[in-house]
Length: 202
Image 1 (cartoon, rainbow, N blue to C red):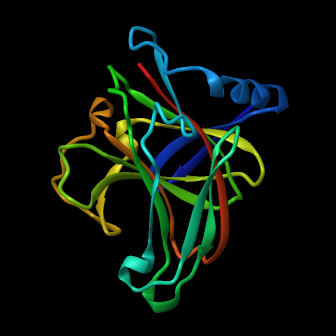
Image 2 (spheres, rainbow, N blue to C red):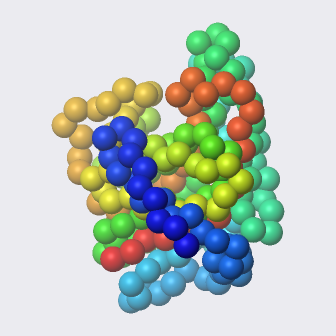
């Protein structure tokens, strides 16, 4: 297993490249439930309807753009694919869902994904934010490679329609009630990312 460091937007996200055997282990975890809050880790799977509500798609079409995307549930992951277009001042595609379990005493968030080499954004929402705001952090995927990306609360900034929000409330991972992913940054063309799991560590 090889550990890498990746920096983006002034933040550091740890990326762990997982070998074949480790990848199999992640897949086998799909059928396991959320770990007890009394343990050191709470594990969620993006395909499990007991962990997340139905995923909603939100593309730039709400602003006149023509980007398109779709989601598909496979046995191993939630597949988020589509095409980003910069026409009509567009340029993004996103999905979002509600987290169905309360987080307990978490200090680290780790996601396992298999991407296409593009940069994506994880978006977190809490009741403390105003409508349309989100805590955001970028991460860059490795093409056709299952990787883990770890974030602390300090890695996130508050954004509203792509603009930073000043004097925003501090992120506490325990308050998260919605999770989303977005592809933008003028990365036009096809995209594809498999969303496997999300875990919170104490």
